Image (cartoon, rainbow, N blue to C red; front, side, top):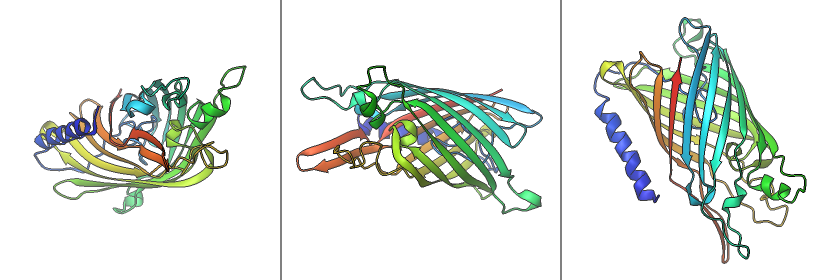
Amino acid sequence: MNSYSKNWRLVLAVILGLAFSAGSARPSHAQALGWEGETGIFVTPLAYTASAENQKIHPVVAYHFLDAGPVIGAFHEASIEVGIGKRFEFGYTHEFHVFGSDMGTSATPGLSPLWQNGFEIFNGKFQLVPENYAKTKWVPAISTGFIVRPNVRNVGNYVTESGNPSGMTGKTNGDIYLVGSKIVPTKPAALVLNAGLRGTNAELWGMGGNAPDWQARAFGAVALAFTGPSKSSIIFATEAAQQPHHPYYFDGSTGAPPLNIPTTLTYAVRVVPTPKQKLNLDFGIARIAGRVFSSGTTVVDLKARHQAALQVSYGF
């Protein structure tokens, strides 16, 4: 799928959103599940949790898809998240990977084998401060959370374990983060602000394997939330998430080329058809990585600069 086709799909999603966004705006956020199962946008967590009015336990399920291009391949994910009260959530996601087409030959190996089968993702979040605490109008929701990913066998993890005669066991990586979120009830659309800091030893949330060590990485998002017919909601968002500069093994310390991973950017549309059903539909474009190494005639291009993604979340 070329970048023109992907951009056309994003434009279509935006047009459809605008077509349904007439009417008065109301402060609103959709408590949908992000890429790794936590309540979030596409790839960044929100400070809100998977809670629901009059429910002490609130389960949410989701399906996620990312077309990461011909080199990396495609990812499918299935998630279940459980909100406990108003401040806790815990969840599990399994990631399924479909190989890319750049398999190469015995004489010239391709890059696609660097991405192996999927892995598990466990997450939890606790809201430290609820939004508008003590009847204020300016206090954001503030939460802390964790993500653990065992059995990751991608990129440098694969290279270092591929010759293991007992088989690949994979490596574990994770995140610990602090995030703040605030809804500003502006008109004609409510403004949603989100910012946080995470400590991580994962590259691209495990899709790029491990990072060489733990690093502090910032993330943030801005969204506009419109109210449509029948109290539907349409939210337009953009996110930025810093990545560790190099993946494990490809950091310049092993003789392998140091691969430079850029900040991940996403542009997304979230549609909530009706407040009566806790259903969220997300469409987006993600900038993952293009040319990550270039020296003389040697070029490493991951061909993942404008990648289509979708998510569906449903709460019970």
